[in-house]
Length: 53
Image (tube, rainbow, N blue to C red):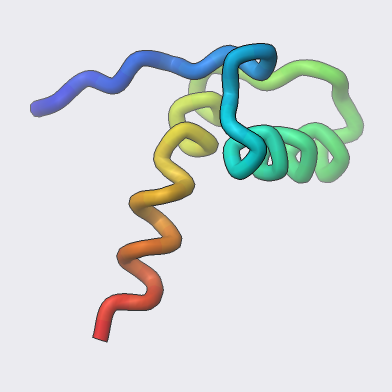
């Protein structure tokens, strides 16, 4: 199993920041827990998987 490094908001790409912003807005908070950091950092994989034929 591969382990991904958690991406902090300050060093995240614009795409990951957008996901984090949405998570924070939805949850009504100003921080992201590690579980959601892991999900946000996998956004590229999620988008690619969704649009595979």
